Image (cartoon, rainbow, N blue to C red; front, side, top):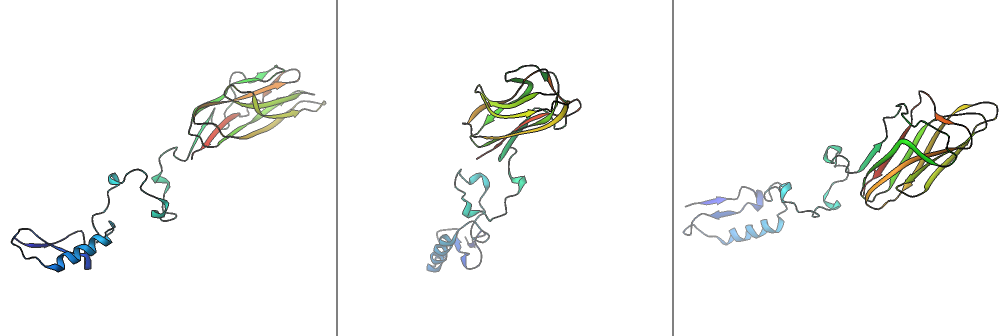
Length: 209
């Protein structure tokens, strides 16, 4: 038989408790216990620390988190954004690196597909084209089976061919689910090709909500 003190409450909130029915009872015991219960918040001296496994989903609000305290290590991979590209920047174009089509056709190997969560999607297509004299080249992006929604046109001078650096950029807002973005191109006459030794890459990034 004994009267013990609580170990998870300290200071003015540390209440005693009896271990047997014959132990002494004091009204102050109840008063201190009531005060401890009223101020209980799981902080040091005010009860057991709250285990992460005991926190139900949705119970933590922004008011409970000190600004600037969430570190990158606390975020799961791809929790904030997700990115996929056709090749590493600076890589050489592979098969299908030229075309003679006068209507927009898919560029071989330049398509990316992944599951979106419903956030805005940023699409970049960058590279270098070799254009012959007096050519007009169109570069475009389409999403899924839809028509070309993003397009850039380039014209070469009549005096000679040249290398043309291009950057296509667009913002999409697709519904949650799997989507595919494909780069397309066309040329007014002759053949257009990616510049030899110059990289080309289609990159798609979703900013998750």
